[in-house]
Image (cartoon, rainbow, N blue to C red; front, side, top):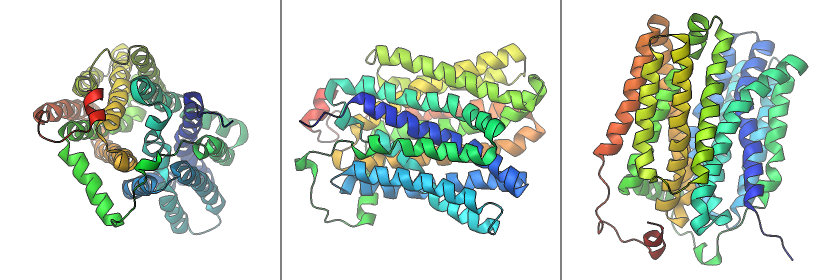
Length: 403
């Protein structure tokens, strides 16, 4: 008798994939610096493997929605992403750096498979009333990975060398392949004939994200908050140097934020229906805005408290975003909704970091104040977009039951 796919299997695979993903960025930067000898080249590698997610996410989502065995496609994407890391490593110092960047961009197209593409499969693993708690647990895998990934990358680089840190990240990602491969398939009734074009499906997904107001405002608020989080991340080295006595100590701030996000989501997983996810979205944005404002004066105790508070806002906001996507996304477009949302958030983070970097060099408090304002604007945006009127769209019976 075939064993039922369990939530534990899903979470184990998600942790491995996302831990490897969080390791891969710092490991690539360390390897790029060690083998190419340039901080510019090192940061270019990270930018290359990140920026292409904005293009790859929506396309990957459409493909996941079209196939009858999305787990097989997801497993293939996971494997190719890990292989891309290996090819990048082999090319460093051996082929022109421009070629290595092209490889990084190509590998980055598959990056959303480790985030939104994986999460989109969750309703088939934990359907019905189990989904809110499962969503909170799924969000915890991101917090756990962001906490442990950079530390593992640094430890592996110190002990075994920077190239082996990249190898370790790729190995972790590959270890998630069995869990991805065995993911449940959609029911037969959901496998409809694909008469529309790829462009048509992309347009349909965009219409759903924009047209369903609760989904639109959650997406907008999360992307704007990600831009604010990118601003904080860009400030971390300077905060470490000027406030904590060393640029390297700035990484402790990110760990503090990840710990508090993990703890907040653990509490949310215990009481998954305590607060409506639509409310969490904008309240969490205000919490993050307050945290960034608290960090601006640059006092050590206030700074540590600020990043802890930021994590308390960031973790539940991610869990609430997942819950809203699961509730609002049509089954036939679920993969696209999740991967497109992940791509938009990655892009928002990158834009925020790019804006805050030069500003922080001139005025660190000014950059943090801007981050606070951006996070506050996310809450404002969520509140400005009204809830859909009761009769604004025809809901499926399942939608009405969940609400």
